Length: 239
Ligand code: C5P
Figure 1 (cartoon, helix red, strand yellow):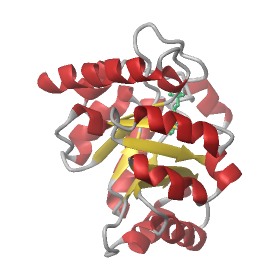
Figure 2 (tube, helix red, strand yellow):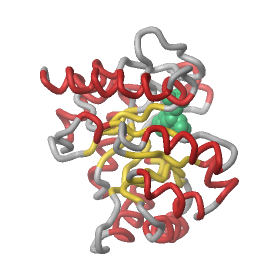
Figure 3 (tube, protein in one colour):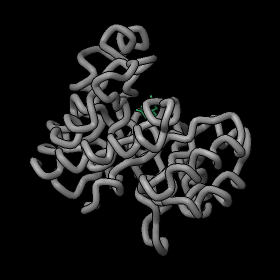
Figure 4 (cartoon, protein in one colour):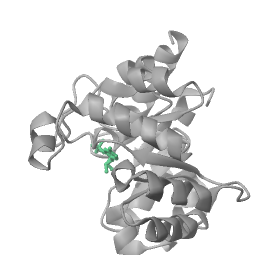
């Protein structure tokens, strides 16, 4: 577990091109631990985004693979070889066999990145899940998928702050819990639904917080990041 508050903050660089991502990473490099490269930036710029951004912090490659076991294992193998990758992920909804294949693909690699399963996207609520055939509350679905990810040998999951407490109790202290959908008290919720403040997410048991627009869209991103790190630090003192 990261002992410094800044090492628990991952900033999502959701940009259409590399120059904007680089400009933000340059501003934030002394303030945060990791940068997240997601499908927007990776689709536009490819592996060179990691080559350029890895010097500013560890990389969370958020490509959320969701495919048959053989294809997911191949994608995870390729992703794990890219520069600076410390975390990568796949959808737990791909199933037990796909998660097992992915876990085996990174197992035993030198400085293997940690492989996380995405449980239920933080933009879902019970109604939107019902439309795609998932009954029950997001919390119950996320807990079930987290247990499945653990059984498959994944290192942790991505889940909302609302369910991390239950997942922590069920999956133990070593299981990595990464929480997006973070909104400081005054921030706009935007398209996220299951949101929490940085302090609440840490107190609920999150290891890492993923924050995008509340930092990258702020009038002063460095001040926004510093305030979130301070809030994380305060919450860590009360864990
Ligand atoms: O801008 P915002 O703080 O909402 O960004 C959150 C980031 O976390 C986005 O890049 C989104 O893709 C990602 N994410 C998420 N929910 C998940 C997994 C990742 O919002 N379950």
